[in-house]
Image (cartoon, rainbow, N blue to C red; front, side, top):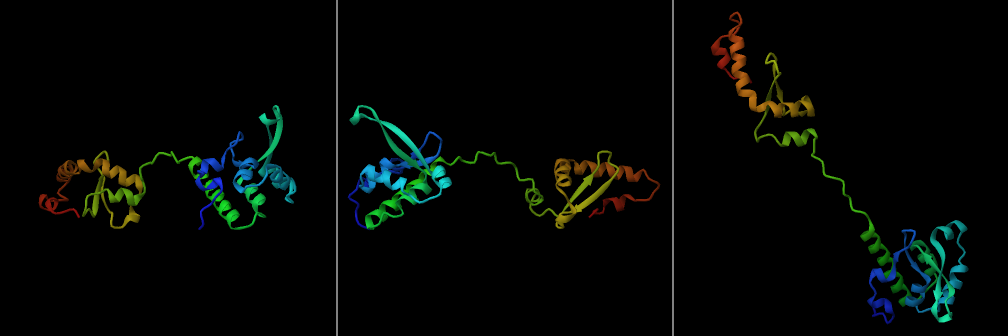
Length: 208
């Protein structure tokens, strides 16, 4: 790629495009005149002669005025334009240098849009999916013992079959797992109080 002799060679993205008063990313006919090396009045004529729809024109071109100090403060018209408006305007500008300037402008619009895009500030919430909860369990865990608050119901959940457990059950089990040992001792005592249905030897055998 040849070195550009126009001012755009050293221009930063913020030199080419800017945020308008309506909070849109735009450039204007003054910039187009400067970087493409065309008289401003010719750029205005080009904008006014574009054969785009009224809806497109209203959405992508905005007529503005500024005080012209060289003409005793006389109002000077110019247009601000969005990226789409800019592309429509310069579509007919041909030549290698024009192509390079178009490319720089497109990159400038994209880079400025990326900088102005709001960052996602949504707080990262804990992953409460079943797989995430199970992954937090100690390595090698196959079964979890569930004992209700009264200590009268005992059951085990085979977490190798993850479909048998839900989030609520796993979270409750994790909360109570530190009490499992004492719950087993209490359960043995309750069983021993029954009418001999279980023996102490049977109670000493692994439950699962």
